[in-house]
Length: 151
Image (cartoon, rainbow, N blue to C red; front, side, top):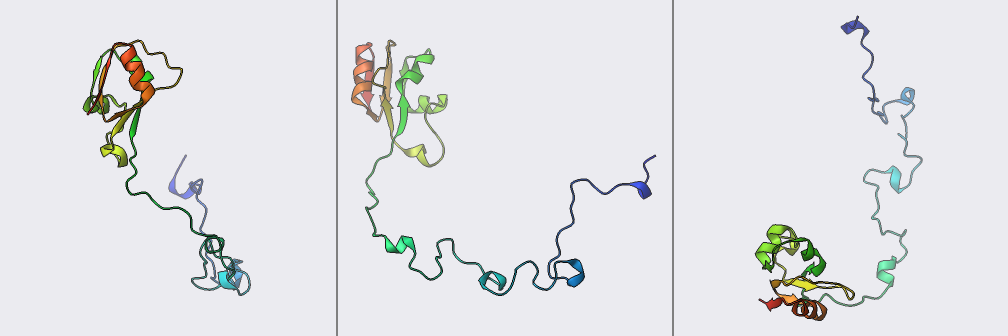
């Protein structure tokens, strides 16, 4: 019978190591930090890139390039994803609702570009409104009797 006096210790619970609490604990004196040195002292951590006072690699190497503030990053849509859908008219709001392009997060406000693979077979006539089309995507859409409209 299970009663309070014969309960076992809870499984998976290990007592925390109490460092620096006397010699008898086995973790007293230096408390597992070894002798002297930076890591033995209070607040003794060094930055990840610290090389012991030697000039760090990120300062030895020259700066390169710049960040282009005019760069446009698109939300991309591959044509082959539209083959599975029965509808033939698509605009940005509809593509977001269907989950083909991100509607939340960092890219939510980015323009939409429709892409196509070089060897892509696309037979469906679709009317797509997007911000940009790759040359190949526009060619494939118009060849299959559809319309690629830049918004």
